[in-house]
Length: 437
Image 1: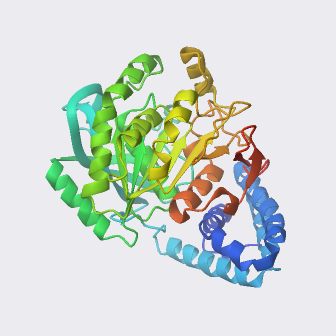
Image 2: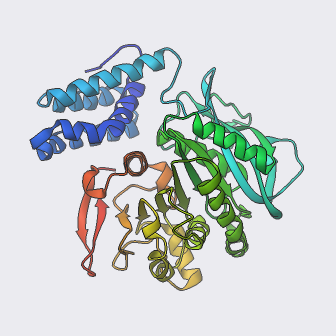
Image 3: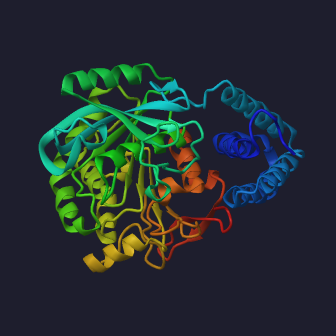
């Protein structure tokens, strides 16, 4: 069963998954007293769609999508909302727009031009190419600017499309790849003025700060910040804090030193975001070693600095588990919510544990970090691929969960696909339900 003939089967199924992720809390409410029955009917059908999409069989995608529609027939109010929103999504796509548009984004032929406001203490290279404006060396302090990134019309949620040399794709094509189009430096005052204007012009006056991890170039950090904000349907202003990573597997030691060096600069930037941008809420997502930067900035805040601190997400944090536990009490009370994603399949964190000789906060298993004020989510059930370290941005399940966290501020018990787990401490943590990945 197809809903429309105006888009192909795969694109329609992706739009269906996208719509369900966005509407899920409302759909559950419309299920009223039969929430358990609703989830038992819909979630297996969604798993069929995900498996069919991964398999690339258009007929299987169509059959799986029909199962989703069939599951909704017993819930007419939820079915009506889903069909209305899916029709609107498909209509916008056929008009050449891929909703939702991030504030300030401009629709171009075959892609969306997304602005990402950045702060960095990397040293400028002096090169004109947008992809080479900043390297891995330390600068002299914070510099600011705006980078423009293309999100292709056929972008798939969770993907960071880039050219593959083995396919002889040497040319940066913004209609096919997530590409840095331009990098425009700005002085501090004009930067603050521009971001304030962008925040004031949004329906949701929030900002989302992304802090990258180890072994990441400035270019890839900008690309990831745009992709995550886009896939989260973030309706505020996306921002990036980029510290001087060597962007090399062998540069781990240097990156460790640099995250310590950058900490006061990030704290300065975080206070700027809290006090000068006019934001209602300042959300933050950090990955891997970038969590050390975020944690240092959070601990540096006091209650008077952080009335706007919203949702804080620690994704695969490469930070000493005991240090995280010790410091958690110093920041959890200042944020609207804190979420930690961990996995026992994270090979990069296993290597980090061997290097540091102590477990990392992003690892799960018997010693998973569970502390008051932080919602810990075990992502081990997900097929996280290769190193299993970028699942925060590479898997639709984690992105959908982060959507509920940042967009709706929902507690884990109100989010689908999570199972409550008991920790020896008596606290509860959460795990992705097997098969929901």
